Image (cartoon, rainbow, N blue to C red; front, side, top):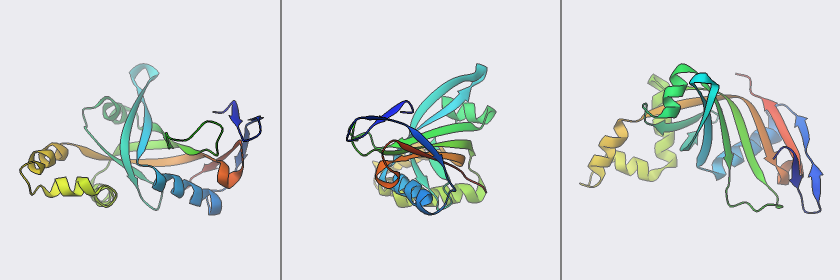
Amino acid sequence: LEEAIVGRRAAMPLRVVTEEFSGRVRRSALRILMENVLCSMSTVATGNQTHINTAYFCFSDDLELYFLSDPGSTHCENLAVNPSMAIAIFRSTQRWGGSDRGMQLFGVCREANGREAAQAERLYRKRFRLYAKWMAGTSEREKPLATDLRAYRFYRFVPRKVKILDEAEFGGGVLVTAALTR
């Protein structure tokens, strides 16, 4: 991705631009989040080995991402030791050579507790109606699903840096990076 982006004409060198996380950059990031429900996340395991996992996510207006996962999974165990995480979000149906859109986020992730967990639950229910239905557990089929899901925990990812490729917004071969201050 960073070596060359193919536009409508020919391969073009990648241009990296640093901007503030506001205006067009913020709108682009939120549009990418709204258009996608899956992310790939990378954690750091013992011995500085990397691990990648895919999860459904929801997000807040403050660009905090939440996902639901088994605390005993490799990525969650990695996060308990080292909260560093990178996330990639993009539509897998994009065609090579088209007007591409996606982003990478870099930050920290920890298990959500208290208010954070309540917000994650609220946002997740809103985004994934089937999850909300299963958690209500009114049918004989839904009750065991709800029991299984209650063993999972919400995790809160707080990005500190974002890298966006949104060729419709910023032009072909332009990667926009921005720091997120909190």
